[in-house]
Amino acid sequence: MNAPFDLTICGVMELGGIDRSTITHAISIWHPDAATGEHIQLVREAFAQAAVHSTVFDDVEYAHGDYRPATRQHVRDVLDFCAGLGGGDHLLIHCMAGISRSTACAIAVLTDHLGHGSERRAAEIVRSHRPQARPNRLVLSHADTLLGRNGVLLGACDDVFAQSCELAEVNKGW
Image 1 (cartoon, rainbow, N blue to C red):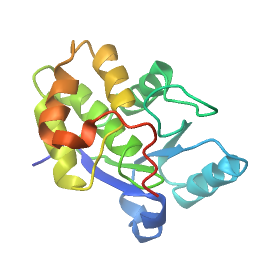
Image 2: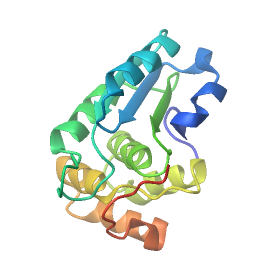
Image 3: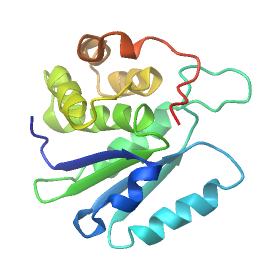
């Protein structure tokens, strides 16, 4: 199943194995901690030839405790960063494990690029790229709202990922 641009989804521990020369755009997703700024800088240096967008939010699906969940603005910024991607581009999206936040952002970006009616196809593309995906439902919900999909994106992801999109308190797959 093909995306409208090359796509790589991974966890932070896989970044060293990525052919950096092919990456034109990178989305680097971190959780907030004391070393986040340092990690972001290291990714920017490692992928210096690429346009890099960094974002910071916890892998949670609702606000609780000291966790900082994704906001609509986080998802809007990801969509805006990827708006100009085309057939010659290669997008890398990583989070800590490459399972939840990165896969949800990839689905959002693909759905935006592929247009209305593409929600299931976008989810299937991500599933084929990252079989262990368990997309963050809050990120998907924000994307569904921002893209005006009225629950269709969430429903498609529920179908494609079956039980993996159930509400989880924290998706710490790393």
